[in-house]
Length: 86
Image (cartoon, one colour):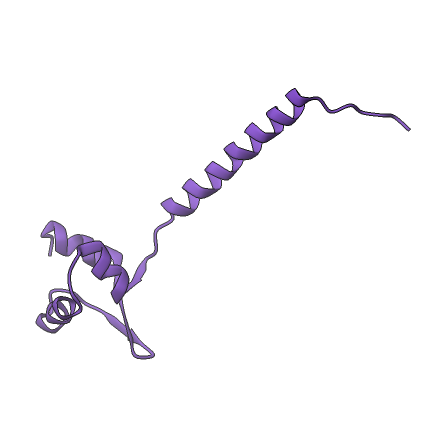
């Protein structure tokens, strides 16, 4: 049976490797954006009220899909509306 000695330097190298791996996981999960957003997400993103979203939906400027009583908005539709694209 071989005995391995772990030094402080080994632990420090392991800690740095682990931190880098965690950072990569966090940045990858943040970069994966959702395709469909709920009303609350759109309100936070655009800093608008529920009534404003409803007015945009009624006027046809912002399309939504209703699933089980909840309106979902496509991220690309929101980006196009903000940028002025048709």
